[in-house]
Every structure is written in structure tokens, then in C-alpha cells.
Length: 194
View: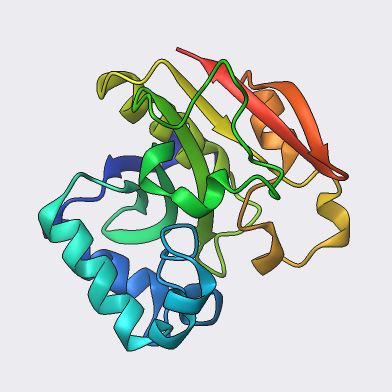
């Protein structure tokens, strides 16, 4: 399959059942439910599992839309958390590869981040990540973003599929992202200007 074979749409409340099906009963990444970058570990860890699911469902219900889903027919096969940096404060931590640069401050909600991917087993390696990134960039553009940043892995061959939740550098390069900093080994900060 190619990225053209997948339909990518913003996550809205009516798509919540599809997201739950994609994530499974335990949720992705050890019960994270995409709250990893939304709160500090001491608040996040006790919520993993059902508490995280409830918190994320509430976020989806109230908005703003926290990312995009990729569908193959009626089945959700991938997820990308993408939105303003300000909505994922832990991603902006000064000890991370994704620390913001002075020309793209967190306070400016037009500065977006593509922070987390999840692809359904059986669909990995089929272009879902590329489709999600393409659809996510279009979602950012339509939402008034001025740029999208990411901090992918540059050693994708040395990580498990689960460990690539930040995405592989090669997918971002093919999408036109350019490296703007390297604040940690193996993790370029990449940017796409809209």
C-alpha cells in the first residue's frame, strides 16, 4: 500500500470508537493513551491505563482536536498526535531533543509539533506513517500553523516498532522536513515551514 491508500482525518468525537479499536483495551505504549507529553511523570504515571484513557477521551470531546487518524476503509490503522507545542508541555522540556528554539517559542500557538505515532500491527511498513505525516501537515496548515517540528529517531534500525513512536527521520526527510538542531545524539529536531 502507499500513503495514497489511506484516508487521514482529524480526530473528532465521532471517531473515538475507531481510535479505541486502534489502541486496544490496554492503550498503546504501556497504557499511555497519548498523555505522555501532556503532563509530568509524577502526575501521568498513576493514570496509565484507564485513567489515561478517560483523560484523553475528555480531551477529544472538549477539543481542540489533538491529532489525525489514518483509515484503511473503515478501520483506523494509525494515529499521529499533532498540534500546538503549548498543548504538550513535556515535549518542550529543556532536557529533551525537542526543546524549542528561540525562533519557535512555545507561547506562539502557530508553532506545532508532530510528537507521537502509533500504527496498527499488520499495517507497519506500508506507508501509514508517511500518510499520517502528510495528513497532519495539511491539518496544521488548515488550522493556521506556521511550522511543524518533530524529533524523530535517526537510528530507526536499532529500535523496535514501539520505540519509534516519535517516527523515523527518513519519513520526515521524504516529507520535506529539514534538521534545524541536534540537541541529543540520534534525535534531530526537524522542521517543516508552512
